[in-house]
Image (cartoon, rainbow, N blue to C red):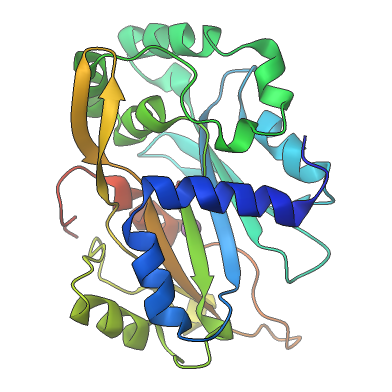
Length: 270
Ligand code: OOG
Ligand code: NI
């Protein structure tokens, strides 16, 4: 486990930049001379005991994070929780897990075989949260997973690492709306996730979000390389609650569409 929150996020950020070549460009476009504050990062896993959501969460709990909201995505067969740190300047963490038992016997067996290849000690190691894939994977298996669950295929290919970082639009000096951020990105040729509309959420739910479509990068499979969607960048604007503090939760209907930022079809449709 990491001893220090900032060094953990710094290591995850370096790994994320390698998977997401466009992230450096997006970061520079929005930051100008300012520092970017991260609203949250997200991780994905399978709900098997060795690697389930609680195992990933333990890395953050050891650093003072506490469980906050819980979320369900029935159609995608996912559950998620978010974690917060008492120091509100630390990024929130959104961890989801695939409910493996709800899938075909073939998928269950394939995932069990992959997770069997994760060394017991690996899940507690400092670098687990940016360690990538721990199992053999050929391209036909990736494609067969994709047919059942885009999430399962993404996780099989990329393993344990930040699936996205999220810019806190509240902290950007040059932008005060998600639409303004989106316009800048589109002008620069960045493709946004349009599933459910480019802006997800509203002031009424106290959270507005948008995201890029994942970059396409070459990934090594056991039987050769293929270019597939990797990681994406997200943008979040939070609104104040009755007590004046910014809303800290997530919105299921919006998150459901953000998941689709790693879809294979280049522009996800509503
Ligand atoms: C997580 C999608 C949900 C959000 O901010 O609502 C999410 C994922 O794609 O793993 O990040
Ligand atoms: Ni997110």
